[in-house]
Image 1: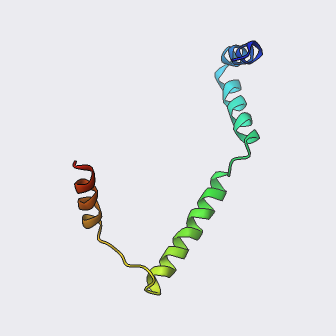
Image 2: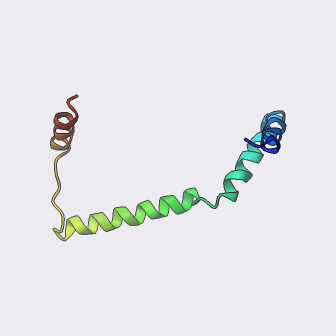
Length: 77
């Protein structure tokens, strides 16, 4: 790790907790990750899509007990 990076980390760790939280929030924002709202909206859209597939008979549902039994057999647990 470059010396400058280590100095930034050391400086950040010396900040009070609230300042570190704000710094972490700001750094995460800079990554342009999806927001919680965007993630929830994407999951809601996916759920609606899958429910529509089930209602139209496009997919076959498998009981959870069968799924877990198959996983146990596959991974021998």
